[in-house]
Length: 151
Image 1: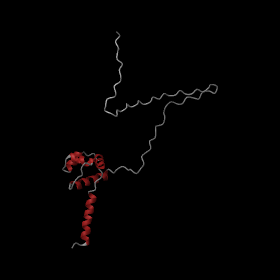
Image 2: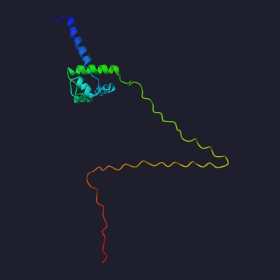
Image 3: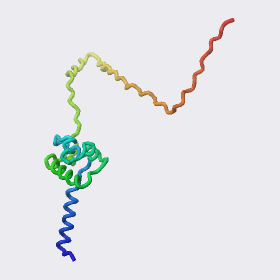
Image 4: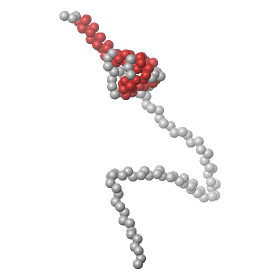
């Protein structure tokens, strides 16, 4: 019968294996590879795999299987140490419009002359989008006036 220490050692080994094989999301896999300046071909060569396979892993189409999974996880873990993900808990910087840098405003009119309103700037409306036909049937034919011949 196994001892408690042997059982604990076996469980610890399983926990280590699971922790090592934990892979980041497919998008993060691609980000890490690109941050390191590696091509899919380079990773495929190192893992004795095809470039398409690496592309499928990064797209989330397929997942790596042992023993390549452990090697891929190790690579990604090393890349994550070198290229940590950008902080996502910070709120995005607010978008601040640029300051107006046009000409200085005109001086106010003299008190003896009545103030005239400034000319309104013409604002051209955006062109309307063409209506989308909701039916594939041709439209109704318009009645056409027939020419009558004088007798």
